[in-house]
Image 1 (spheres, rainbow, N blue to C red):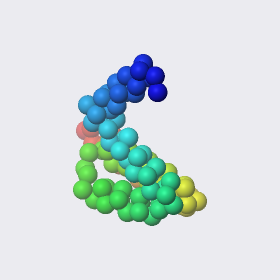
Image 2: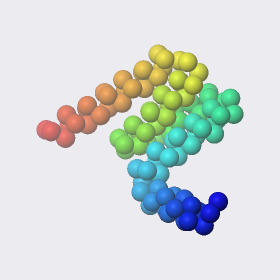
Image 3: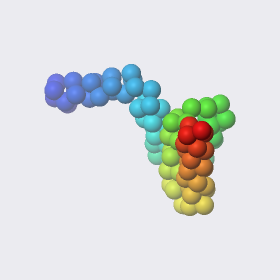
Image 4: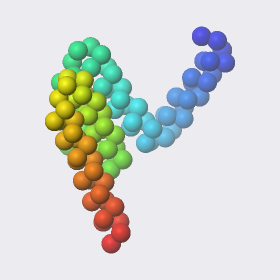
Length: 101
């Protein structure tokens, strides 16, 4: 790797590390890559589902649900993938409705 490429790589990761939304998105997708890539999608689903139990912040929940959708698509479970997207719509719509009142 050339030095300029390395500096750009490090700079991009610095931006992620100091941006909470970016860090959450990258971490959830990394969980998918780590376990789906090893043929262990159910383990990724367990970790992400457990995270949903303890996380209340809407943006983080949305990122986790998109990651779960990717896991379910990797095992061709379209129903569960669609369920995650339905929950994203419901949670975000509810938040918008609450914000407008």
